[in-house]
Length: 608
Image (cartoon, rainbow, N blue to C red; front, side):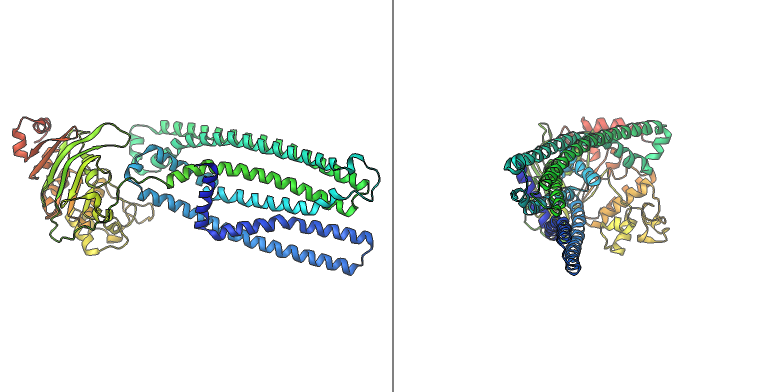
């Protein structure tokens, strides 16, 4: 995509989100470009009137009209600026909302893609440091449009000066068009030099800012994921990691500050050179106007008008060069932003409705399924074929890296199969409506999350909570006794992040909340990935003993490294190298000379 196409697409997005602010920007730019010349023209008219002896009443009329026009234009500009700022704020909110919505809607594989997540992280840094992509778009548009209007107005006001060659004394260089061309060349060279300096310093400054982002990455991780989380405080103290963390954090902060210092120095150099070139332009302009006035080619009243107009034009051309530099920066950051917005969701989203069945008789089949992760040549699942019995309780065991978690990801459609098919009641699951299919599955992941919201919202995963159903889910998950001690009941906040009256629950209690959330969903398929990892032996025993009560007649899959916890399942799948190497009941498998027996014997010596 070319630079022009990037800008075109970004402005199309801006226009779509806030067309009113685009119009406000252009109108404000028009008024801002014209406004400075109102008082300049008024000053020239008044000086001419005083020199020619115009009566006071007429001069007072000129003043009243000029000030009135200036007030109206200024008020309109202020109103437009207010509308523009409000539009920018709305767009910034929309920008953050878009990023979050995309994060929730893109394929899960993109959330695990480092390159794409790095683009998102950089854009979040941009929002925090420079106001976001929409601010970077509107600033050069505002300044650039104002500069163009100002230049056009200057030409209208100042061209008569270059055409006035009668009535004066002398001649030669100052009366010929060569003088105007010479002045024009000086101005153009100064503007060109300013633009080149801006481009050079912006390139170097952007490089230092990228360096700041890179050094800031670890710093932010330490601050937000280590120092700001109470869960990490125990490890920091027990293993005396405070000094290491502080020194690392300080070192990164120093590196980031050094990058910012280099950026500031670069822009100070830019400002110094630009000021020098600007002063050169001013000297040339005032010298030219003063000589022509001295020779009588323009009136004294017009000296101020023409000199100020030309100086204003030069300033506007510099603003235009800065606006161009701003557009170049915007293109650089905007390309990554558009790439993130245009993430290619490769997962096929079907449209078939899922059959509504009160008896939960959904048959799930794997037909020669193979899978490898994107950008990898290694198959994690290899030619897997099996049928999950309706209403059955299945345990999945195996060594680390054997494919157990990937197997669950495929059932949950976090990834689609590379080869083969997964069928639900005889139909490829990719053909079903994605949201309807996901309603069939309830999962307790090993890396579950309980949020610092109300207990009821955590269980229902919604602001609307069925109180009776939520309490029943808590009881079945083994959290009923603890729940009855809570004064606020389901309105109790989990943790104290948002409410000082919140309750700090233990890790085991939080895990039971995750189990209760899975029960509350009341889906026909229940998947539990190490659901008792944070529970004490008694609570773990309660969960196993109440497993039938928890899942009822639903089809259940249970992943665990503790083989003793799988004995209540009628069907055990043993994974190894992405394949099912054994299948059967505990009693059958422990008698066979296979992997299950090896794993069982390795753990059995620790059992009482």
